[in-house]
Length: 381
Image (cartoon, rainbow, N blue to C red; front, side, top):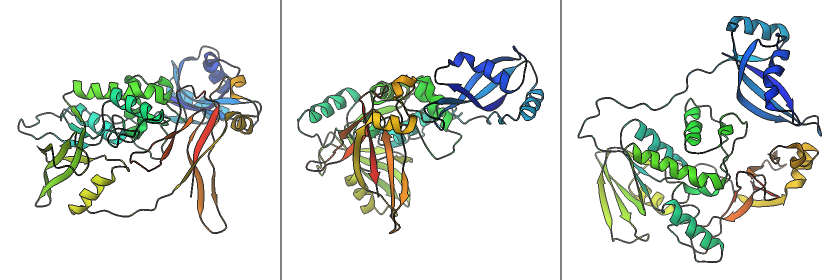
């Protein structure tokens, strides 16, 4: 199968026309292409207010690929070969019966997919998550947002799914990895919309993520893994430069010596997230090597979604039948400082994402439909 790029549809046209459009683009007779598969979809707003959806299509035809390639070259159409097979975990054979189970600290996006991969390998991981399960976590966060007290161990940062559960669910990355397809398919298998497999800027939405994350956890448990909520990693047990186990606190406040539990392991995955400062300090005190890296800081800014739609599309997104517009800005000041936007949430909300009493942290989130009427993003320096 080959992939043909740059097949356009006006926003007023249906995707049912894609096969016909592909045949016309390649100067093929009607019926030459048996089916098409959307590999990628993006928006072209350069001729606004005329907006187009642009597709890369996997072409299925009775014609052999060399003839399709010849048609592409003759018509000037951009094309590529189908991607090499993507990676996915497969059960490991002959795992020793006395093998210790791997332990993962943190059940945010990193820990969640580390656990899913290890579970699919057949290694039955144990996850230690200091926050609570989804139901308890959502209840605590909504109570906090409505004026209640902050729970330092169960909030927007800590708990099932990590900070990602209360976010836009954007799935964009500048990293090329053969594992990307497996991750996206795992999301879809857990209830995410199928369009994340091909949209240029896919997103799931906070409302759907809350179900997806629980389904992924249940899949990990079906495969023999275990997620222990209310369990905070305290310190690793290291002998001779090797991991022998780890201490964790069960349902205990930071600094408490009560309910300390020891677990044996030769594999400890640290998926803590940036907010677990107490655990990071404990790891530093144990002698783990750490390296300082640059960081940015800034604020959340908000504006009407209609303002962004008009700037990007020349019209409101509802009239075009497409999702609200987003944007990305990146400039360098005369003093040489980089200023840029990050985590832009079309049709979303700015939320309080604090994890410590007396400290204010903001984040952006949006539901799948992105229909709040307000856009927001982080503006960082």
